[in-house]
Image (cartoon, rainbow, N blue to C red):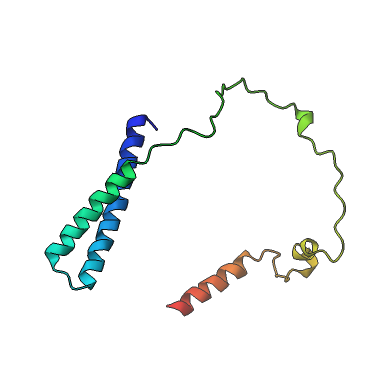
Length: 130
């Protein structure tokens, strides 16, 4: 962000914080049966005090500066660099992944495609919800 935008944001956040503090002060004064004028005056004083206090805090210097970054030319990997060299081990017979995608444990359908059965079940559910 630019310096002006950052400065405006900081002023805005400080004003909102001080406004909330002033509103809290007015609420407390009203709870103690103060008149509306006294509550408004107290809120204004607390707002001004809070806003001045927040604006008097100086900005800290950046603790960590990022080094200048220059984009370099892209180098694409060779086809051999993308190959997986590690041999994958076979899954154990009682592995959940094997059981989850095991075709023999899937419910059998007449035509080998369960999409129609799924469509029918969803249509039946939709009708029951109406």
